[in-house]
Image (cartoon, rainbow, N blue to C red; front, side, top):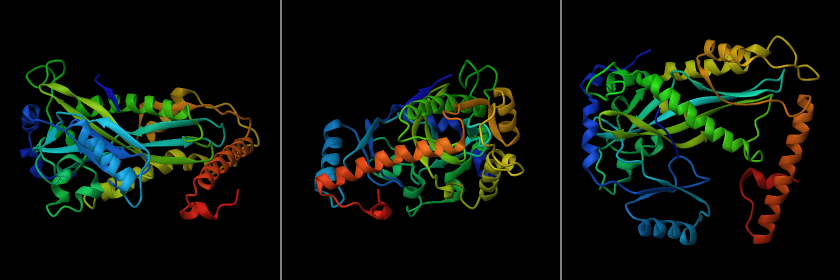
Amino acid sequence: SSNNNSNNNTTTSLTSVSASSSSSSRVRKHPAWIAKASSSNRGENLFFSHDVDTLIEALRESSLRSENPVQEWVVQRYVAPPLLIGNRKFHIRAHFLVVGCPYTGMTRAWLHRRHHVLLASSVPYNGESQDRHVHLTNHCIQAKHPNYNEESQIFHFDSLRKLFHFKEGQGRGGGKALNLEKYLLERMSTALSEALAAAAAAPVAFAPLPQAFELFGADFTLEDRGSEPPSVWLLEVNAGPDLEVFGQRYRSECVDLLRSCMKLAVEPYLLEAAPALFRAPPTGAEAASAASRAGFYGEHCLWHAPAQQHSAKEVLDSFKKRIGIAGRWARALHDQSGVTVRGPQSAVVL
């Protein structure tokens, strides 16, 4: 986890949801740990526990006795007390774009300025509850609950100004009103910058290409600090994020997010073929201006990497070589252990 402290389709019901309702979460007992399978998605293999022994037993059961055992887990501290919306736990699904330039070989990452969503639970928060719908706010988990209601559980990032009212320097009690959107964008950007820098240190797992772009979804939770603005914690980053989190209510915002991606990652390169050799990249200020015009948070480039080769062909050749080495290593592990390779990977000839 990473922590940093530094269009409005909202319905009228939002006006009755007060940030003060979050203060009750500070006096309750909360889970201490949460664990998730490193290779799972859509809320699968997620566990929370109030003590270490219970968590270890749950992981042992899943790893040793289940039909599809899980070998690798990510264990995190349960962020508590959580900030609440209408006495319900929520998290922020933020969207950022990693985009490579086919002209220069430079890769940059940008957080979108607006199109993020707040996803709330279907039931009121109770720190002592064993109900996973109380603690796990994943959209795919909540959508299956009989009380699920998109109108009261999905909010656009722009809704923050109506949901919460913090003050600069003096919490909610006085002082100038805090621009919460800017406060969160700055802290989410810092956390994502650190995460991307760490990921880039392992290029086999994270190797963006200058001819490619990818949209990611990052999940953040907010820690209630009473009258002070919340602490911001990065929970995980998802490749291929589920855009159903926008729901029907924010469908137009989802379309606009994809339009922003096209404006930054595709349209600038339609009229001119990529050169045989990379040329000098634009300045940071020029790149930030282009990102801002496309709808991204140009004030903070999350991460950037210059070209490591002289041309796109050299980059692809190097990428193929690394993937081949990793593939042969993985196949050797499967052959040695006797575990059958499943899925489309089984058809790959290395």
